[in-house]
Image 1 (spheres, rainbow, N blue to C red):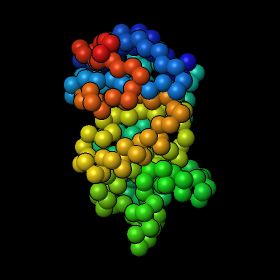
Image 2: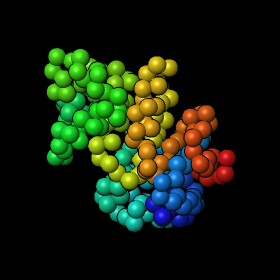
Image 3: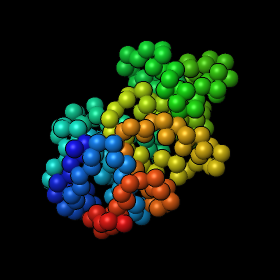
Length: 212
């Protein structure tokens, strides 16, 4: 079992966001969760990523239950990509020791190589504060390269293509295909059409999970 969720509930103060959620995901499965904005999809992913601690119930990812252990097994790509005020290379490695070959492969898979080659400083180009010197599509592909380089067994995608235009979206979709190949994938979206490749799709509504 890659992911096990049992009787999971979560609240922000008095406001209950998730209520008694149960879900098992086998290794290599591609699961989709659809729901309107604000229904708790991102909260569920952050719990699965080990970014939040469980308040009630159980989350187990690749046998790990502690958030710090869960984080080692998970790569996450969000709609609003967070880049550090550093170089493209540093944003991909996040300070971890990676070989030049591993970085090159991640850039190739994320459709970044041609763009990076056109930059005067190449992979050492500074992305600016909050990634302000690169476009949304480029920032998204840097985040995908980061996730590919991490090579985690579980990939979480939070509205990963919803803010992109058509041409950029194609490149990002291709990069996502490279990222998710052979992995356990949970993707969330408010648009059912974004989840067409999933083997199972659930609907999150009123804090509860239903078969879509």
